[in-house]
Image 1 (cartoon, rainbow, N blue to C red):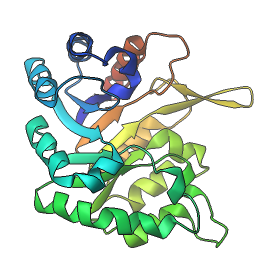
Image 2 (cartoon, one colour; image 1 turned 45 degrees about the vertical axis):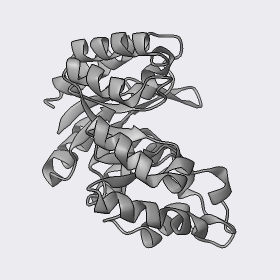
Image 3 (cartoon, helix red, strand yellow; image 1 turned 180 degrees about the vertical axis):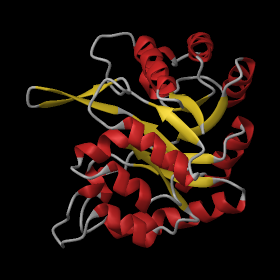
Image 4 (tube, one colour; image 1 turned 90 degrees about the vertical axis):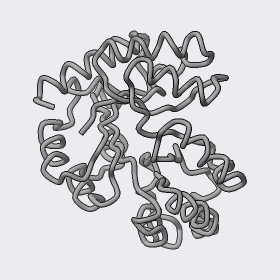
Length: 253
């Protein structure tokens, strides 16, 4: 499993080519081997690839505009060929799908793009939050609908450990259930401050990462471990990425 950084953590510093280059340099200097590209500003796709290559960073995954996936699937595939990236990610389900009336439309909208991606050697990936464990008014749970309607060969999941925990679900159970769909996993820890849940560098919160990492290693289904911290609460995001990296390596991964 390659250990990488999700660039959403450092999104403030990826909005132009000059900053993107310096950010990739700093991520590589920490020791990360790969990146997920998310929340990138006005940086041409070719430049993204060249800069990542310059610093020895494999582009593992992206978060890509879902509307563009539907309207310009071929263009999205071409961009990912340039990036050398096989995994094309949806960062979050649009609110319109989060209802009993419209949840079935998700598969209708994305099955055709997903088939085109598969035929091109790519895979559509869906990143969960906690909303996917919502029970809709008709009794169905969003996650169950996604699993039933989107076959594993057409859509994987970027399992996000923090949001599984936030949903009141068990991370290890969902790793087992989704094991054929999780080539990419977001490593994200949860601390508690009073009654509030708080994001934390991996190893500094309350998730049992030694067990999580051991399970992923044992299953041998995950290619990329991607560290993400959505909010660093005023701390340097580069320092948070460094601490996560050191803690994960200290666990033997």
